Length: 473
Image (cartoon, rainbow, N blue to C red):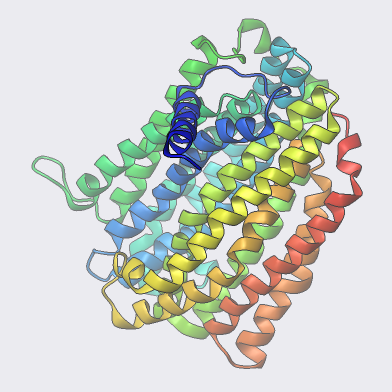
């Protein structure tokens, strides 16, 4: 291949990346699938990378506080409980993505905006109840998660702020789901970038204090994260109501449409359940690690999971491209193009995660050193990362397949897969290895990649059956 040809190809790739970041409107039901995946995946990867930065930034600054082991445990255990909020947010956002993408594929942008607004009403009502409950029962939540008395005493305020501010978590996920369904992945990316910039600036200021700004300690991390997400939501709402995208909510969309609300709920409840099933299994694993390895093992596990998610969320971003392509192409009556989009996205994800796996085996020590200085915690975290990374490729392929089902509006199939994979396999295996075979936290680490591999294999078999192509939303 000549240098001129290589230069031309690189120039074409960079041109596409610039186009993806600008957020130019595209019709993803025609033309090159490879180009469509790239245009959607680039901003979605950057969006998900920014979502992972929230937890990593908090963990970094909290990890440098005095008695950081308790602080890290608080952040980790609270994040484990917040995964239930994330599950609800993801469940409702996947309903919004499926409905909006289907209407956009049918060339009905006004109907897409109407569907998006009904999803917002569902989310607001639901989250109000959760926020109040989480604020009131924050210390009980930490106690239920197995935190010791000192961690509960120091960390209740952090948990209270994070749970009380769960509405902004919900809105950030949901509205970005609306943007993604419309193919406006760039806007979703920008929302997360703005939210993260605010969090990165505020986190050290509110944790450590500066000049007239008092030091809030671990509570400052929760304040910074909630404020940052709140700013991101304000940016989203401005563009959703006054922007120039395909989905623009107007006054007549604000009226509650009960039949459409029921459609949102019908898709969202099983989507939410699918992630709650997974989230509750992760909560169980967090508690199992805390019981068998105590605070050092719990801190190590939380660090390793945050690092794992930091690298997995970009892969999840790429899998979101599959959801949008599936929804829009099914709306355009092109099921074969939808299937081919999923296969190509899975291939790209596999290449990326092979590289991440190699990175973890070579540089685990260096990566973990960023987050903790405690030798016992560091050693356990390195072990956890290396074991967990063995399943990286299967995590990535599984995410693409699951998001393909969700993008089609078939949230029931992934729910069944998760129920089998997590609760009939992962949880019993982790308990068996950790307690019966007395492997402690290491047994929990080993159970994760094994079970994720099983889940991916089940999802692939179901995907090849093709029933998801016939779902009507």
